[in-house]
Length: 59
Image (tube, rainbow, N blue to C red; front, side, top):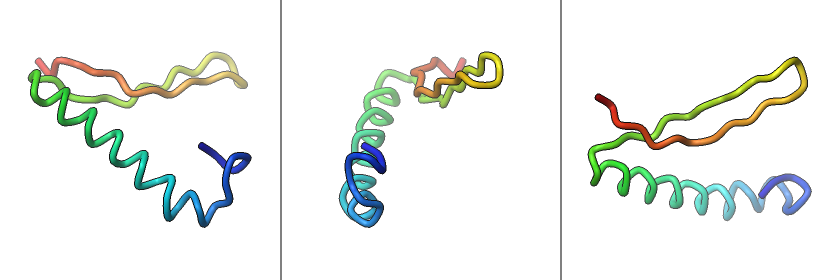
């Protein structure tokens, strides 16, 4: 989901709520198991990076 797949106004009105719902469900599942979600960013050099959500035990 990005600017090449849909216009910005469509993303804001339809795409973003879908992403919010998905993340909300992931938060609920993690919390039910005593875990939390963490955003992780890995940077390699000056051109490559990746960002993802990691399920983590807060203890």
